[in-house]
Image (cartoon, rainbow, N blue to C red; front, top):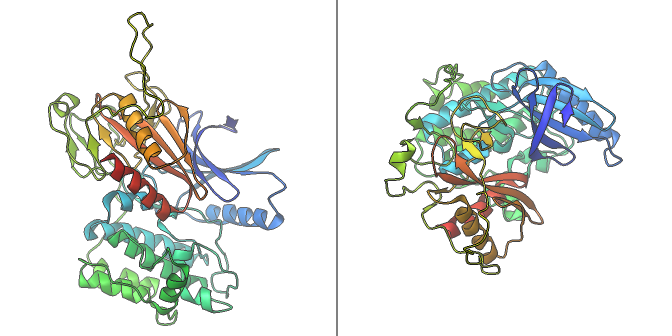
Length: 447
């Protein structure tokens, strides 16, 4: 699909009335994210006003921690918001892949987020939907704030409508007829910081009544194993009284962020060929380096965040594989796409081994050193044992659509390594925390 000078490919996200696809500039081959809002009777004038405000706000912003608007296109069928693409995925997945983010790295990421929010506040803009799902990472682990679909460009005026995500909404937005957006954004920063350093939410989010009481009273269990300075900052932000809540300026000079200097690192020049040793800092891998593929195959499997297994896995119980016939025609083996955790340029073109390459880390993964079909069969058995309905667009792809969540799972090959396969999970739609629990339950079954 070609829109303007951008060729569109797979879906990478869904919204309430929009779809986000990966695209490429046909002249520069630069990747972009394209938000598509279809022109349909379901979209009313209020929705369109929000969209035009989002575009207007994004055009006015220029900050290293805020995603850039590249183009805005309209045709007879839809509106297309073309934005900078961030290959590192959501901050939410980054947190889940590590269980929690250690304080030294959390300081750098959180300061980037605070600086982004400080910038929009100075522009008289409030975001009103701050959460880890709306914070993307570049492939060099820099934060980019996205999704200004609920923002207001009247930050100094009282707001009356409640919006945003329930887990991050400020208490005054729940209890008052009007509230101010800047303190509400700061409250959301506190919940983000809690999630960043603890890997969980401060509330009983599965019980709406308990969560409501916790939010309006500021009652939460402090995270364990944190520095006193970090705990103090969390308590200062999650103050249910907006007048007593810490300000953006006070956050930036808080002792916990003391000594955190320039947080926007200039990326190193991209190398055309991978180094002999590929350093992995993302993607759910708990070890720092994978050796060359011939060395990997001689070693015992090493545990990652989720699980590693060697067996090819039996066929699904409802459809056993037939024994091969001596006269059967030899079929061409299924070639999985490759997934790269390197920082080289992204491409939908073919890789050096002839397989399609998907670059950029996808974070919930399982490694195997065997046949990709064996990996797919084992995953299929797990889905059957858990009573999860699915469809298979191809032999190595699974689409899991439940009532409240949509997940794609695909068996991929780790780019640059022979016979190292991963199951990559991607949340297309639905609540992020439910997605994390659901994927965790699948991964536990795979162990």
